[in-house]
Length: 342
Image 1 (cartoon, rainbow, N blue to C red):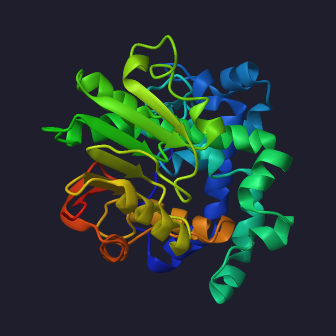
Image 2 (image 1 turned 180 degrees about the horizontal axis):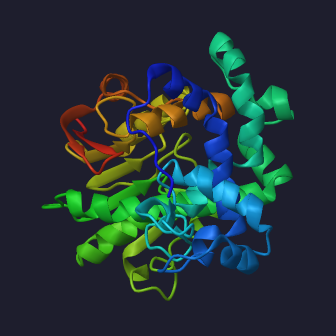
Image 3 (image 1 turned 30 degrees about the vertical axis):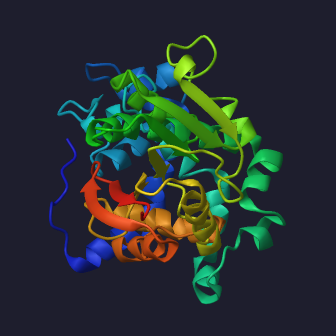
């Protein structure tokens, strides 16, 4: 059974960190091979797993041994392997599965951009255009369509997992209408409409995004009669009036896009309308290792950035919003409760 010292010395810890790519690659390999899906509720030998996965037993054992060092799978006393809480999250059938997130964060293009971090830090801008000759999203949808599908699945999974938390958090007393701005497939909106039967909603996002909205919102869905789809770009215009505007995880673009989006809400919203901005923060959060890593990846691929609490409040104040409260949504999201001045 593999045992690891819980408190390695600084030199050994640094050695472990500089080999972090090995852990990342091992997680990706395990997901691509389907190890977590093949392993059931009882331990299995490496030979049994290798037969199910059609791999060689010895290399598979080496892969699993590496992953057990990080708490992903567990080696039993007799040399078999069993699930842990983390390895179960790599299963496709787990309700809160992180399988697609794990794939997204380790897609082939990521291995090309990470070595260019020094260049991005020196210049303060994305390296993606220079590396691939086009912008990040153009590259995904034109040249890396399988990666684009992984991105869509990962964003869908992440949105579904946080939508329930947002719906549980928000007090909608006195709110008759809500607009989900840049809301993707509308999972947050759908959960809010399910919880509040008298609520009406609008979903604004790019045409191809809203065309693939949550089935609950589309024609024939149980919430369709209370939803209006608004195809468009929130950086250009927000032609929606509502009691509450929700903006979740889209203010991590460049500052100009953030200013334009918030300014467009101020132009159309009634005085006193609520605006709830939900973001990952790179401070005041128990998920700092995750969010700071995502912050650097945003710098590399689109030139964006995750916000600190201070920077996000600054953007909202600059736009003219009044900030009333900041509430944790879960371990990695915060909600900023704001209003449009009277």
